[in-house]
Length: 371
Image (cartoon, rainbow, N blue to C red; front, top):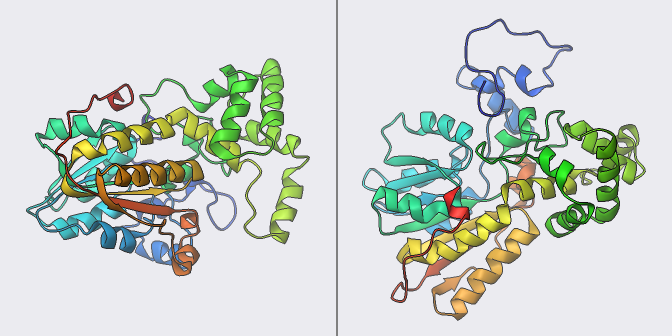
């Protein structure tokens, strides 16, 4: 077993699936082996879908244009994931540059290592939360880098894998950890946090309008039986909102693109499990110490709370004279990109350029950087 419950890669007879097309993640064997079935990728992308086990990077052209990687530069990709942005960085920094690839998800990091290391690319890999960027650079013997990039949120590989428990679309354990080294899962928090703590998280991390009632129902349900599976949590949320799965599907067909009733709760729980806002605050804090003079930082966020943090930090540091300039507005995907990759629709990209480091001091790594 892998760290997130996936079966190891060994030869075994493939189980037959019901119907004419595979529906479940583990049944999509062609999508898991696109090298042997390239036509599948083209077919799914034409329909605006992402092949299982892969990820489509967002705002690639915009990121490259704004951060302007050049030959010989050092780039820290703090959320390397499937390697989509990393691949583009590598093409531009060339053999004289260096890419520092960081990710908290070691399962996906190893897969990306196998993909990107084949051509002896100038890249090193680090299993770390991006809040630990300063430690990673120290380990590399680098005083700083030219570009810091982070693509926040959750990847398609994590969303689509039922064993990760990050999506309301799949039945599975409520795990939600991006890093298997974290001690508490989503289920742990659901079954131990107080009603007030749950309600606060659902409101502040996801703007869930029914936060109080959802928290109350969760606490009442766990008195009867622990909440450990995604379908249990979905039933609770449907009950709060006076819905059934059948009724929701009918409503969704009538109003295409409506947010799933459980989406906000799942988002809040995932952010809480991984302390995503805490890690982002630490990355923003240490970025000025990790960039060379004239260095650039770019961050893609998918959550309003994350975007507000980035916007305010860049703005305040321009006023303080730490950054010489920052993007005046968030850059969002164009209609064409959203049509081909619907998961990009909520993406917002912001960037800033460091002014100088004359007042910089060595940052403390903090608790978050040790993950």
